[in-house]
Every structure is written in structure tokens, then in C-alpha cells.
View 1: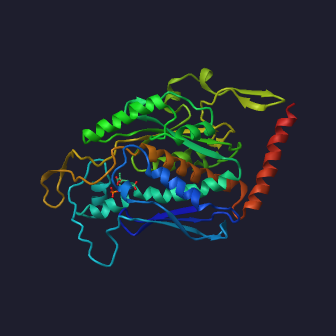
View 2 (view 1 turned 180 degrees about the horizontal axis):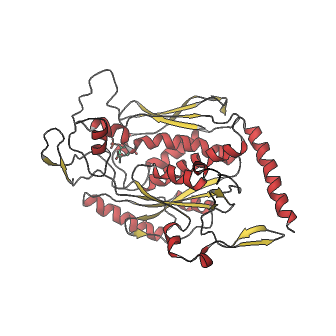
View 3 (view 1 turned 180 degrees about the vertical axis):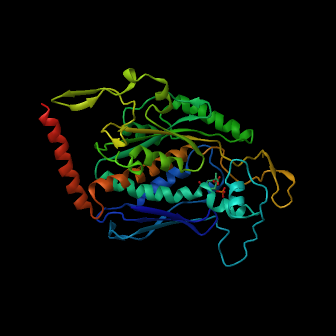
Length: 383
Ligand code: EPS
């Protein structure tokens, strides 16, 4: 399966194409729209979200709501479209790059002095396409009872230590949250921090946690580096704009511990089969799912655009100036969780298809069932 996205922040639309998506999967457009709505919400989002009404149009790959195996193309129209018409757009040139944005490196790379030509594509608006693709993959994974959920762990220094039991708890608790949070008390502090940052014309980052539940052991592979499940998920999470760190399981904390007290010991009873009492490695060993819940964290830096801009340089005149001030978010942490879920869904589906086949859902289900039998037989033999 391959995924491509296209579109500029203020172009006609944002698009996603999924090639190699299996035939026979029933897709709900409503579900994709619910996911898009989740991406738009959350305290700290900017005025653009009040303009847009992100709704997907599926323009190929389906017949009677069921996938054909042909490329699935989706588009979401931008209401705030200004560029890419045949007419001259009258958008002012932007010559002073924002520190921490793609502006300066992009201007070097594409030999530009107008960073408008860089920021249109580097804008996090592109994540609309990823959420569409992720929502399609989630619906495929649903056939195998694989559930994906996320929650906000922290905003700046305000953090929650609450651990959920499972994805069902994450879903039910985050549903009514304004910040994709499972901890109401911590959420209040997080919201207060965002409100303060808004007043201070500042921006904030945070940490999100993603849970993937129900994946059977053996998805991903140690046979080659690019087939490792942890590597694939980390790569895709790292590709989300503003992400600066990714952890699996205990992550960086693991490095401080001793092996004897931290590795997840293996137990067996005839009733339960093989099981673990801990999940410090976050559901992945040797680049493969081990049957435990898969847990990742992603750290988002503060949004690059500041209403109290930092020092920069005018690329046309070479003179010192304050960076450009564009409309932006104060915090996009709630959206980040939804996007992280989407990227995790894409990564998991890719390696799931590597193991169980690509063409039709029926074939993949048959392969899955026969593999499941061998896993169960192995457990029985140990009785
Ligand atoms: C975003 C749309 C953008 C920004 C934000 C996310 O819209 P506009 O630039 O018109 O305000 O609000 O993008 C960025 C933070 C960025 O750095 O580009 C969206 O749809 O998520």
C-alpha cells in the first residue's frame, strides 16, 4: 500500500490517494468526517478552524461504499482558498522567515525569497489528508478488532500521570474533553496554560500517547530494518509537523533502568497461554508486535508562528527584521493526537498487509485465521 498527499494550505483542496488498499472493505464516509472534525477541535486552535468545515469527498476506489482494490482518492475542499486559481492571487510576498518553521531551510532549498511558496505546502493543513487516509486504514483494521486511540499527556509543563486501562477507556474519557485528555484535573491546568499563552501571544507544545490494541503477535519483522514495526511507526509519527521526539514503551526511561528489573518476563498458564505482567517494551520486541498493547508517545514542539515574533532576517534586503506573523494556533495538541492515531493506523496496516496479503479482504481474513490457528497450536503444545 502506498499513500500520497497533495494540496496547499490555501489551495483548492487537500487530497489523499491510497494505492494498494485491499478490495472488499466497507467504508463509511461519516467516520472519516468524524475524524476530520476531531482534528479541527481542541482548545488553542486558531481562527482558520472557524472558517473551515472539513468534509471528505471520496472520488474513486469505491462501488456501493465497498472498496474495489483500485486507488482510493479523497479530497477535502479548502474554504479559505486564495491561491492556485488562474487569476493573480494578490497575496503579499513574505520575505522574513519564522524561526522553527520550514520557511528558511525551504527558501534555501527551493531558491526562494518569497516564503509563501514554502509555507503553503509545509503548513500542517496537509494533515487533513493524513487523517482521511488514517480513517480509511482504521476501518480496515477494525475487521481484525485492532483499535487505536490517543490522549494528551501534557501541555508544556502541565501533565497527567493517569494511565488508562484500555482503548475503550481512552475513547470514552476523551470524547467529552476539550483537549483529548483522560484526566479532567490535569486538563484544567493544561487549558489554563493555553489561555495564558494566548494572552502572552506565545505558543505551546506537548506530548500525546497513542495506543494500538488487538494486534496479534508477529506483525513487522526483524529480517530487515525497514520492516520493523517500531521503526515504521516512529518514522510516521516523526513525520507529523512539529514532532521532535518519539518513544515506544518506557522509551528514554528504559535507558536508565537495569535489564533484570525492567524487561517484561514471560509467564504461562494453560488457561491464559503465554502472557506478561508488565509492558515496558510497549508491545514491540525485535521489531514485531508481541501481542501486548502497543504504546507510543510523541513530543510536539510549540507552534512556530508567534504573534510576538522572534528576530529574523529579510531574505530580500538582508536586513534584520522581526519574523512574519501569520494566523496560527496557540496549541494544536488535541489535533496532534488524532493525526498520530492516523499515522499509526497507516504504519500498522502496511505491515499487516505484508504479513497477510494485499488483494482482497476475504483472502486476508483467511490468511489471518490460519495464522491465528498456528499461534494457538503453539501455545497448546506447551501444556
Ligand atoms: C492548519 C491550518 C493553517 C494553520 C495551522 C494548521 O491555516 P492558516 O495558515 O490559514 O491559519 O492554522 O498550520 C500551522 C500551524 C502551520 O504552521 O502551518 C490546519 O488546518 O491544521
